[in-house]
Image (cartoon, rainbow, N blue to C red; front, side):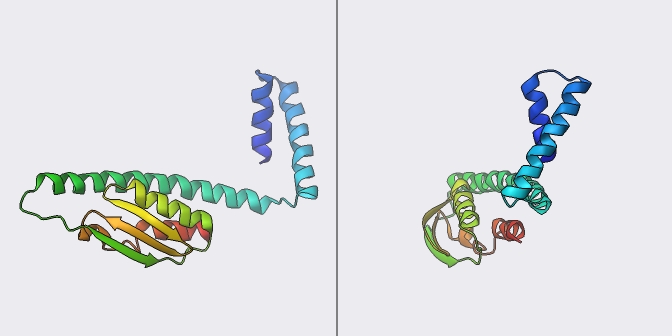
Length: 152
């Protein structure tokens, strides 16, 4: 957070000089002291935010890869005439603790082609899958594993 304050100060000034940098460090130190003393903020929060940022970027990469793979499966379903599509509605429970993690999971499922989150009530998800094969492993998907790591 401290470095973020310094960078923000430099951006607001529009140029970099020794005086601006030194004054920015002073202002940033005062702001950081203030939020630590009066707003119950601590350096451990910085580490948690940084860890979640790294996991979040990894999660976005995995999400994009899963979207590409699901697109290929849906294209295969469309162009394969021998195979008959079997739509299915699956209900499962997850052990994710936070509302945010469950929300991200529901949106990740919906963003992946061939699956739509119909309802999410507490820990229970109802998902419509374009084909029965897409429903396999939905409860223990890579999304759930990554979100558990982010919650820890």
